[in-house]
Each structure stands twice: as structure tokens, then as C-alpha cells.
Image (cartoon, rainbow, N blue to C red; front, side, top):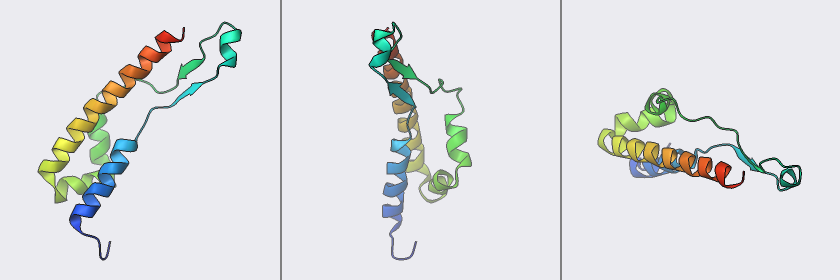
Length: 96
């Protein structure tokens, strides 16, 4: 990454981490068939979120360059991911 500061690298990877998402779909036509139009395809996490991050080169590099900041970022992102999934589960129930 010639010409890129370490701070810029951290911010760019942080943005990628925050964009990881769940898979879901919404098909209003299913409502007419008596089916739930909101489908959540993703499964709930199995507690291996941090292990996943540490096995990904782009994220494990952060732990070597910015260990304290990476820990804060990963913990915060794990909590946000759990909250997003819980919100999506509520939407599944809402559209039943």
C-alpha cells in the first residue's frame, strides 16, 4: 500500500468490517399467498465471530498494527452484528 498511511488502512478495513451483513429478502407477493414476505436467510451466529475475524488476513493485520483499536472495533462490531440480526428476527415476526 505505497503512499497510504497506517491510519487510512485502518479506516478502510474498518469500513469493510462494518459492511458485512445478513442475507434477507422481501417479496410482497408472498403475502397474497399467505406466506411471510420477509425471509431471513442468514443463521444466528455460533459465537465464532472473533475467530472468523482473526482468520481473515484483512482483519488480523489490524490486530498486529493496531491491537488496542482492533479489539475495540471488533467488540463493537460484534455487538452491532448481534443487534442487526435481532432486529431482522423481529421483522420476520412482524410480517407473519
